[in-house]
Amino acid sequence: MASNTHTRPHMTEHVDQDPTSYQAAIYQKGLKYQRSPFTFKSLDWESLAAERLSVESKGYVVGNAGTGETARKNRAAFEKWSIVPRRLVATNTFPDLSTEVVGRKFPFPIAIAPVGVQKIFNPDGEIATARAAARERVPYIMSTASSTSIEDVAAANGDGARWYQLYWPSNEHNDITVSILRRAKQNGFSALVVTLDTYILGWRPSDMDNGYNPFLRSDQIGVAVGFTDPVFRAQFKKRHNVEVEENLGAAAAEWTRTVFPGFSHGWDDVKFLQEHFDGPIILKGIQTVADAQKAVEIGVQGIVVSNHGGRQTDGGNSSLGVLPKIVDAVGSKLDVLFDSGVRAGADVAKAMALGAKMCLIGRPYVYGLALGGEEGVSHVLKSLSGDLELTLHLAGVPSASPKDLNRSVLVREDDL
Image 1 (cartoon, helix red, strand yellow):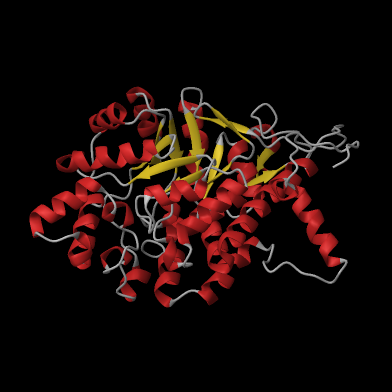
Image 2: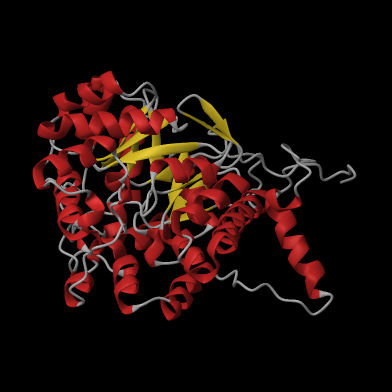
């Protein structure tokens, strides 16, 4: 691409990795009366995906805990903040979207949130998502509840950045935990994301209406990590005198009880993970200043301010609502990441202006997966990045760095 007065940082030869060039390519195709197979209206991704999904898989991904109050608060919280544009900000570059998290620089401030059972949304499941993440240079966070093995996800992700999300077995299964961590590290997962709010599945009316728990069925959906784990397989064979494949129902139930033990670990237990995982540890599910401060005290490298997208606890506070207080308390001492309710580039901009260093994207890419496999996931990631880039550019914000993207670019609507 020839240089001109509108140069960009981080230029690559791959046009589809250059956020707003995706927009330009779409308009060029439009000159030949061609349209994208996917909509750019991010709030329509859910309804369109729902048309493609079974009743069970739709209920699983769209559903929330209880009445859905927490999920609604997550979305409403974004509308309480507005981006204030600055004019005549002279620049000859588009915004630099790069960010540094747990000691590594990434070109975009978004990551693939850990979502399990992806084959219920598309037969290619985690393989498609892992490939798309690598292609779009976005970190892939693999769920313990995946329907694909650690090894196969790593192969699909290739030279992409990948982190492993742990649903944490109880201490009596520490040998299994060590086995999982060892496999993750051996397969290039550079950071460990420990989910703290899901030691048992929440009260999810949509799933209960459908009588649907994907982890209990006689297949590898949601249990592939366990079914391919040598320690779990050996223990199962010793107990039942058969291989996992010879009694899938019993194996699925046992693995599900292992990774969703019903009761929480304590803060002291994190030491065990620190001893057995050589890399940054990020605690996901933090919602209070006190817990964030405790995370600093025990020496982890990051936290995710998250309420699981409203899927675990009803009646909770919005994730964005508590983000500023948590950033003020610990943002200089560890990396604060964010998820829950992100649906557009402006949402990412607001969360980062409030102090998050990166946003995890969950449901939107799942909808992309349902609509078009790897291409659908890539579309969502490129759309969010392009939307973010133009949002900052048109607001006169030169980069996603905290020196430029901070609370000075926001105003609370009720203060106007």
